[in-house]
Length: 301
Image (cartoon, rainbow, N blue to C red; front, side):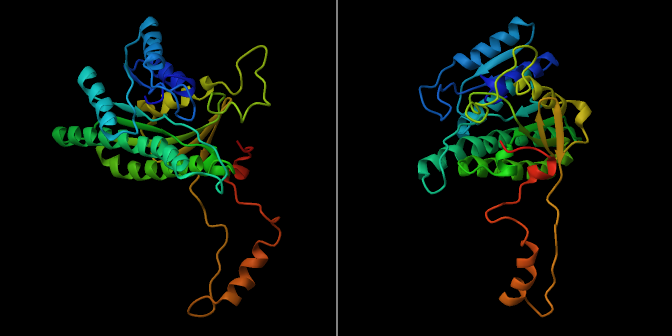
């Protein structure tokens, strides 16, 4: 479980432990949500200790999953300590928000590195493990991958071109992985969680926590879905994207063709495209973009 020292990752790690999983809690431990500050073993160690105090089994790993070798060490740690790996949950991420015309190369690279490359690194080594086990057994094995995307990919997020692109890339990685690993018994799915964490403190600044009862934006609303997708019950769920928050789960369909136009000639001309496409978009206000969230009836986050 990557990025499990705080927020969503912590809630998900606790839920997996509650369901009986032995958990390797990974967190690089940097205090800044932008990936700044000194790495610390504190967050990962604290969550692992919390799991053990509740009667569960947990180890801490404080490596940077965006580093290929350290991601290898994380997967190898789970295999060495517990004999095999059954579930990989990718959650680690940082934010470096800026409008696209102001974003620096480093701000782009850093977010793509932690989110997208971090997801790839752990997936690569977990997938190799499951493939080897399946070939040795001559049969499918048990494997689950749960990746973390975002509604920033679905609905767009003007000040997060790096984050939205990384989260979109994670969906592509997930569907490709799901197809590649299905024959080995492994499923791969992605979630778009909406929760109040240090990563979203600006987004939900105007939504105060209720005085009584569970916060609708609490990470605890998201964790059960991760537990389900990691379980045997979800064997038929593969290559899917699910939005989850506040007691709601929405299954996102693959993109569908909204309209189709055929040229009356061998190929379209500019004038012909103007004649069919311009009227099609005539009722849409200038600057408005397509958002899958509109279909889901969700508001932007």
